Image (cartoon, rainbow, N blue to C red):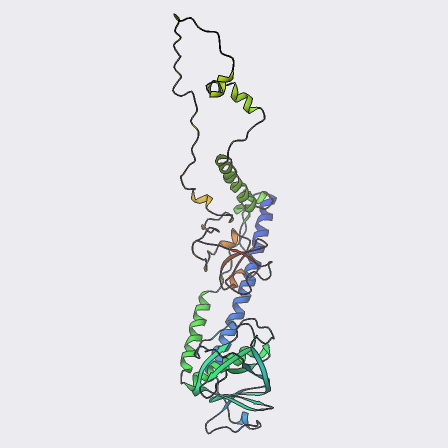
Length: 390
């Protein structure tokens, strides 16, 4: 093991230990999230390559299979739903979602349950065998397909049926059903290779995003800001106040002290005002004596300061964002989807920061997250506060 540089200072060792521990925690959380997603992608890739049904699976089912029809998937606890107000659904797509959304076991508004029974997925159709009869959705007649992003509901439109209908499933079976429905539809239109190629591309992109183990910091790398409570945040706040407060004082009017009106009346400028005519007139001066007024110096009266119109320097354009060398601020610009690798050295990143899939945001507790634009942004850190810009 490499030896660290000795500086003879205890606080430097504490600084190195604290920052190394935080870096390791963030790395372990990001690596665990990366491995979980990698396993899921590879599982889907294996399933897409070996997804084949069998006629034996439909032997005990109360359904008559057509010649060449095989069963892919069954679920006994499915509910048939219908939409009261029919709308045009988007056309079926072969898009694979390796990160299924978090679903709540609820029925969306405008959707009613009309039956329940056994759902069967074959290479030709989706069938629900309910207590009131059978409902078929044939792939060849399918014109619209929509998966609800917040509820375990899938709606389907077909040519031979006027009202839009679909299935309401248990939340634990939704991800498997939606993926297998995509594969079954791809088989029906002979596009299974497109789904496999899409998964291969997702795996390659994910491999390039594997988090790197952070380098070990030595006590010699400790900054003097580590001596202050709050570290760099305290220094950043002090610098911001040092820049903002003088600017506010410069732009504001000077305070008026008590008695300043009497002091102003005693100045030469005040004696020249029309109010001085109300005082008693001085004794008349002889006509032979002419008093020549003394010329006033050209610079006796100070010129009032004018407000500066020069733009603020770039260091002041943070709009409340912590000091950082990357130019990230709250003023505006473009969203930061791929922040610099050293961002957690300057900001207080949430655990599992690099596993986020979004843009850089600040949570209400002051931490920084990479979940901007997602429904669960800063869910464990008091919620979303504002977005970083570059």
